[in-house]
Length: 294
Image (cartoon, rainbow, N blue to C red; front, side, top):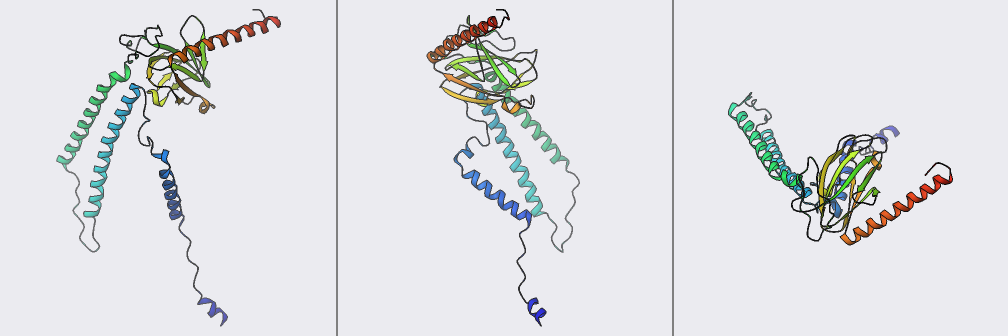
């Protein structure tokens, strides 16, 4: 009697399937991320840039993304429509089995070639602006250094500030032109309104210079020099990261470009030169005290 009574009790509700739980958690996480104001900022495209070359790269990216999105929606729309409309009905006859369609295959082949030609034409139309340094503005620093890079056109009708960038495990070194030795690590200081050309190399392994808001990547290769450029018209800080796996501390190889008004940049150059001279004098004194020569 007691066993029969227990058998009439309602059974416990089945636990939710693990797959459904994962979907619910991921859905909630997506809602939280979408609700964050910063989540939509340049979520699908590169960040907005103050430099013309990076803006041209941004434009090319948006055009390619738009064309790709249209193609994706078209293909997926046709696929889903075909799956629904031409599926086999329950109890119905088997739909016609189509093994090939020559006009359709020729059509999408020609269409793919046409899209490729259009993208190539747009890319070459922007390529000159991406690779050719922009003229320094009237308010920029008169650096007095002509661009003379082998693979990079000269700045039209003006001067630029040329900085030598050297990648080292796991830090960046920046050497500035001038009679006085000026260099810095990690932070690159530049004047606003001035075209800055970079000569990039490495002293150990392959690295990759990349400040997303200031243009494309440029590899730093031992024994070889690559060139790139940017121009910032407003003061600001622009962060970057080595984009080439270069060792166990690769994640620590960051860089920051700090754009200053020309007068503040001159003050920084003078202060940096004085600090370097003082440090070298103290090092020389310490060596003499230890009897290690001058």
